[in-house]
Length: 139
Image (cartoon, rainbow, N blue to C red; front, side, top):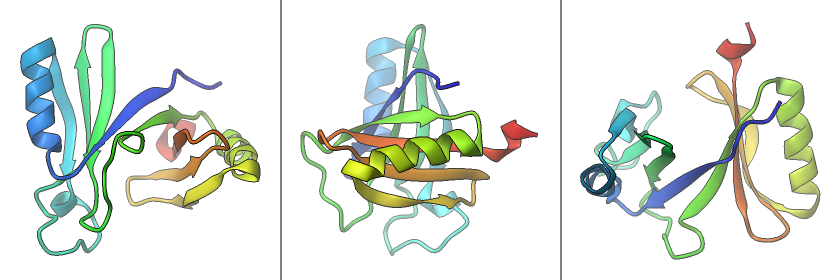
């Protein structure tokens, strides 16, 4: 069963600053903050302190954020995607397959170091979907 799509904001090196700003504005808390330096793969020089992933919650408000790699530009229109947390490998494969039929694959569906299957597809109407299935939830 699909859950509510979650906004995912992308920044060009200012994710920590933006998170602290949103905390001042909305209250709430920043959780699950992981930098590229914390990740279990080699990153380009200067990326270690950038945010690879973080979550923000305040009452009913919930979104996720990250910084881009150095070679990616952020512009209005490509700085937000919708994240779906899916319940099974079958479900993520089905949705990924349907989206890529008329869309553009931004990241192939693959196993990740964080224990999930993940893929990113821009659909036929320009909306980017981050698809994630946490394998640990299946057990």
